[in-house]
Length: 294
Image 1 (cartoon, one colour):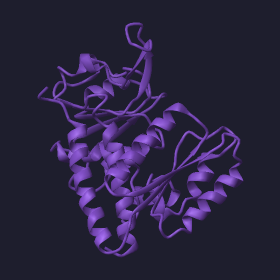
Image 2 (cartoon, one colour; image 1 turned 180 degrees about the vertical axis):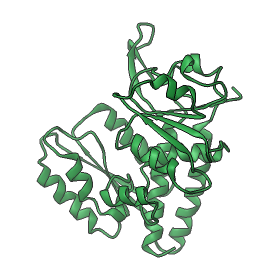
Image 3 (cartoon, helix red, strand yellow; image 1 turned 90 degrees about the vertical axis):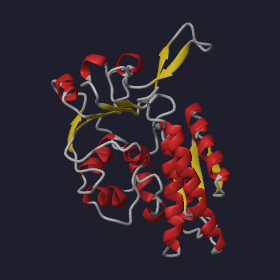
Image 4 (cartoon, helix red, strand yellow; image 1 turned 135 degrees about the vertical axis):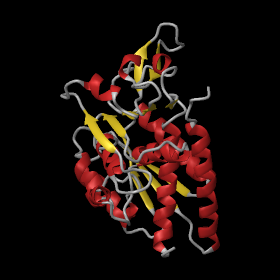
């Protein structure tokens, strides 16, 4: 459809650019290296890490996955991360969330060397994003959403942006990105959450809506201003007796209802999801480039 923002196509463009950067690094004797650490056998984590590792290998990034038992102690996990922090062949470290309940994710993410924190979760990188300082890493999903806006030529300067969700992985960093004093930001941002009043009214005045609440099909047609740009970050499983497994994945946007009203809209799947992996690969190459000062 004409108003679709094709995340798969844009991600493919970024992958092609990343692959060229990998080749240039290899010509200089640098092999970008990325390690994935997964604790336990969460089914979704297995799939996500598998997809990321496959794409990294396609692009020429040396990658490996370390799978630890569910009972692994926090101390053992931190020791492993420290080993990779000191390994010069590794430029990016990704600890896949969620972690088992006995492990403190904040402590773990803070233990990754900020220069190898390609997920952008370390407090130093979060601070650099908030202060609009160079040299950090942006979290992959918000960075991917921003790249969709840029490459789809959606105007952001001076427009009203409503972000649904205040999580540390998407909502808060997304707000920080859109608030920055830069040509592809400079937006007026409202961040709505579970305690916000009049969410519908906030959404109705928005030129751009970024839905990242984790509530299936929350954003309905009557909440969207005609012509608004809508980006759906959500991934939710709902019951569907007609589906082969009795359920299906949907986003935070009621796509069927909103798509005819929106000026631009991401499909789900095929919108934001591919961009998250694209930005992870890009961050890994940036980390390797910084090692040689390029």
